[in-house]
Image (spheres, helix red, strand yellow):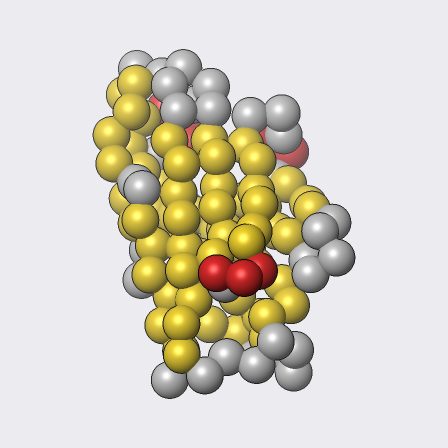
Length: 116
């Protein structure tokens, strides 16, 4: 059984920073892609940032230059450093992991609220 445990969410003021962490544990076979998605009230879930095993990254246009995704392969952990936060970043953020044979796993979600 695979578990993804997210931490680091909460309340921030506009212009502030938060750092999300997501640790994967259990019987997971060779993690390939690690990613963060988010879902705001009334909106569809969207991919925020993704990092592949070779270190290459992709970002949602609206977070480029403000968010940085990184990973620690030894700890099976992915991070999302969020800076210059805006109220429109308010959402539930979900960690997602894809293993080496294409299986996907999701975290339970963590709330990020940015006040203006």
